[in-house]
Image (cartoon, rainbow, N blue to C red; front, side, top):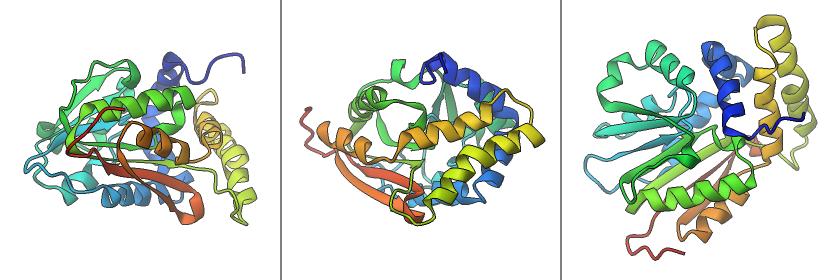
Length: 245
């Protein structure tokens, strides 16, 4: 592929075109695991110290993590969703979150180019957005998380990953590389957009490198695997006495 699949406008095009059927596709093709992993991501995140916390959902997509956030932390004052795809956000509000609109703001922007304020967030969450970045972009994201969190602020990010060492890994990769494109061609409309999700996932590897980048920025970080490494997460906190790296 001659195009840069990590270019912001390329990513926006993929997810704008996917947005109409993304929720159903994601649930069916992951056998419901994406929903389970979103819940586990929120469970893994340390509790914010602020009484009525506000924070960001980065690469927010269709906002499927918001119900889990608001269930665990009902006193959340505001979630600001940041995503380059306006189509995904519109889908979120139409299908899932109309009655939560008073707690949800939206910024349509490339997260890495966004002008988010320093030390303003009590929490940062991201579910299944890490794969759309390359290693250099992950380093920028780590700097952004460290910059935007208040001292004592918390975070958790989860992503579908390559379960290296698992004896069923060949079957898992077959599902990503063969089954997902087949489902798209036979049941869905789209020019290889849904199959790109499999490409991003296999290229990603796991979140261990992201964990090291976050630690390098001075954050406290836990790295965790789910379901034999088919998903990996990073969670932690910005120290109260934070010294920039």
